[in-house]
Length: 177
Image (cartoon, rainbow, N blue to C red; front, side, top):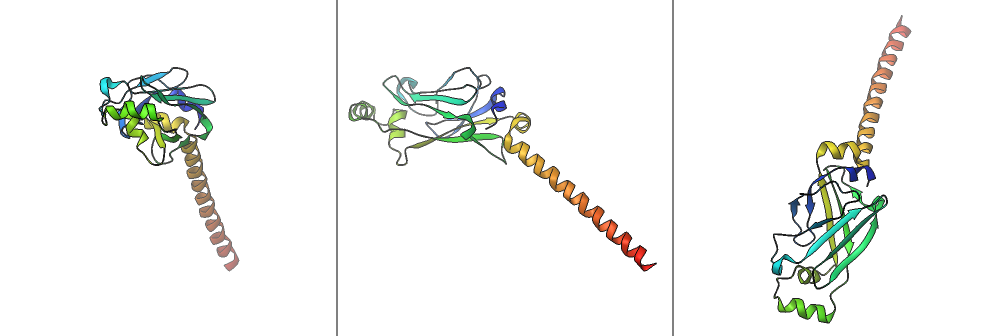
């Protein structure tokens, strides 16, 4: 991911708890931690959280609740892949399962703990992501810049091919005379 995207304010974020896109009400991503909560899930008193912030090289994030942190990790910004077709970035995060004591606490909540819902997943991966305004994304996205350069290159190649064809036709006309 191009670090310049961190200067942009997302319009939505991909919730690790419910897997849906929610409106982003915060600021741009760089240097400022943002705590996000999922209002779509039934966590008791909405105590589950998702905190993320970025510095120059890494995305720092934690996911947990008042009882425990499920994830507290960092990943390199340059490992986050930008979408070519849509103005968003999505990345996978692996996490550990709950220990027995934590699982017992969550089991008593009978499906009302977002962490226990994540712990039921088989693959132990969750997706995090951000969607940006298309103009912002296109301005800074590496994928967008590459796509724009490829388009320009194809247009140049097409113009060259047309000129070459025109030159061939002129040469044929001259050779006939």
